Image (tube, rainbow, N blue to C red; front, side, top):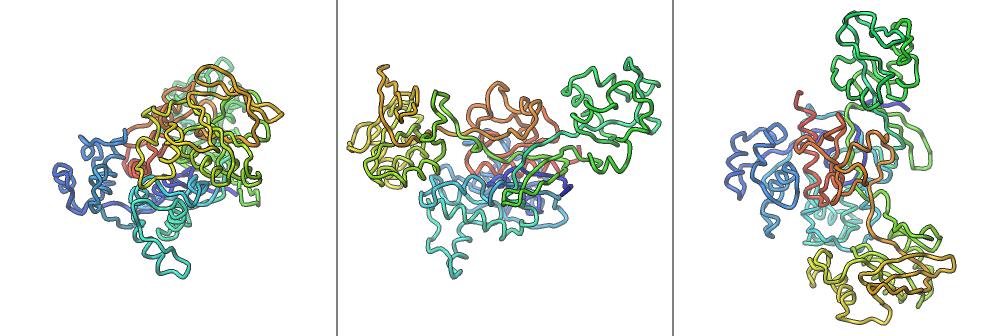
Amino acid sequence: MEICVDVIVVGNGPAGLSLSALLSGYWPYFNGNHPDSVLEAKCNESLGTSVVEQDLQYLSEGLEGRSRNPVALLLDSLMLPNADIGERTPSSLHWKWNDSRSVSHLVLGAGPPGGSWNAMSKHIRSLSPARWLELPGYSISTWYREQLDRPNGGDRLCSDSIPLGDVTRYYRDYVEQMKLGANMMDYTAVMAVERIAVLPRSTGGGLCRRSSDGSSDGSDSSCMGNPLSRSSDSILSALDEYNCCEESFTVDEMLTTNFLSGDLTDCCNSIYCSPQTNAERGKKGYRWRVHAKRTDGSDERLELYCKKLVLACGVNGNPCWLGVPGEALSFVSHTFSDICSKMLSLPASSTVLVVGAGLTAADAINFALEKQLRVIHVYHQDASNPSLIYHKLSTTKYQRYTDLFQLMKGKTVNDFYTPFSRSSVMEFREDNTCIISDKSKLQWSVAVDAVGILIGSEADLDFLPPDILEKLSFDARKPVSAKLNPISIHPYTFECTRVPDLHAVGSLTGDTLVRFIIGGALGVTQSLHTPK
């Protein structure tokens, strides 16, 4: 199946769903009131005009907060005024739908709406207040009220912290409530993406002809030098300078056809000048070809074309590995669901090794202790390290985590729990033993029944060509990381700084809280409605 749209969004988590809402014509409008008098005055200058159509740089100037992106700070300040000081000030925005503002788009996700939230434990409560998890135009409190009216609805009122299962259901229902279903391609995995290079026509109406030495047969200044002598990167760079596009090809097609061989006798006889082939290959005006596959069991293959591609797939694609011998053995797991599945089949008093000091590792440890399994807990940091999340958690709201933190610090004792702080796993062996190096550099050999390595994850961007992948982040030598190496973007359009027509939103750009992630939707939407 072949489909053409203006925008393809890769990822159907909160970032992708928010962007779909704005691209569908749901736009924010200032309601006239805000506790920040300066921001209030700025917004009131264009009261009645959507924020999408205003100067985002001007509105966001001077704002500070927990995001590095000015647009994210702006939208957060308008949706959740004074949230960081604990106030429940009503939103300063109302949302209106205008179909004339809609942009044709598709949101691709390997599973149901909600993205990685679908893989989280349903009964664990959110760390963020419920309001911080809301998406544009449909509040969680409204969702709860509607749930109470449904025969099979929930029985909880919206509180500061809610079960993650409720958050996941809210994101799924959001698609129905906002009527986004026609734009959703759930259970669709992106297999590969190709950049379509666009070739300019000469002034004579055809592409300039080249001799074998790369010289042109005319004086047309729009002709490029011999493309064969250039790298694919330099070809793309040169082609980006042209806007008068007539024909389109992928870089691989350009490099493997006579078009770049230098001995093309007549460009008008080339297969790529054929309107039929142009329709099959590039579609006039389209910059990306996306190869996708249905993951619902049908294995249907899809070929999609778009003018703008948006990465909204988050950083939870590939679990991180330690990189030690034996890590691929069958008793070693790298995801929460996999280690929990293994633990369910273990008899009481079996031994589980958990590596990591984040909340996912904590959830696995608590799960094991509840099943009366012995836990060996290995983590790099000292328990007193202020960077550990446990230092920031309320003892009343998050007792499960703070109780475990007391065990990590040695303040309390549990016969089924043994901590190894400032320690590392050196090796896993086929006889189910693990070699641990502790903080004194002593090595311990311990026998275990299962291992959970829960040390975070990295973005899965393997579908992108290597030459594009290496241009995305600040440091091309390292994988994309929300904290350490985010994708480099323009602060107001969210377009990748070194890859035209490619945008990135969400945790890929450094924002991991939902309340800031949705700022990317505003930036991308405005960029699509602003003439260049």
